[in-house]
Length: 235
Image: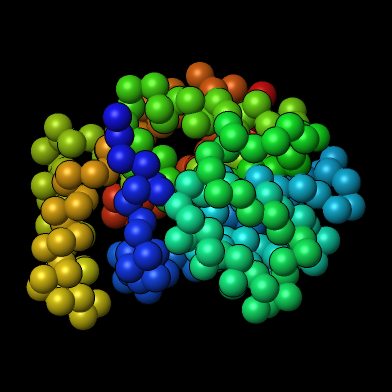
């Protein structure tokens, strides 16, 4: 069985996650900004107070970013890591956003039944799952909780590991990480983890999985070395 996000992110790693991601993901804030506007423009028929599902809500960066800029949006977050969820709850409370966001420690399929959501996101989560049915199951559990035609944002690491381009992209990624000031020890740990625990699939497979899960009109809007972002609609 694959290692879950809950197992991956102990207290130490959860506490370092935000600083770590800003060093490793080019355009991290820009990704969230673009995602927010694709959601806004994709919710033409949503009510005045739309409900968003944030799958893999992590430390709450996404939740707080969206909530601070959209005072009428409400949120349900789900993440299996108790440590990450605790950080997210503290972050929302410090910003006075707790009343508009409910965070569950667990998986999307564990969420209580509710009205379908007006939008959903899955940002930097799916690459932790193997493509043995787990990736598809997660996408299906999100799709099943969304309104027809509602917008969905997916961002993930992606690559064809058998491609001759893959080693070059990895070396480019490593050189960029070194330039951010990451120590040699942290750099080696990061790349060991990348090889051992990230389940890469090429973009073609991501598009196939989205279609199988019931999403349509898929477009890529973000690309940063090995990271990609796609916007789609619930079919």
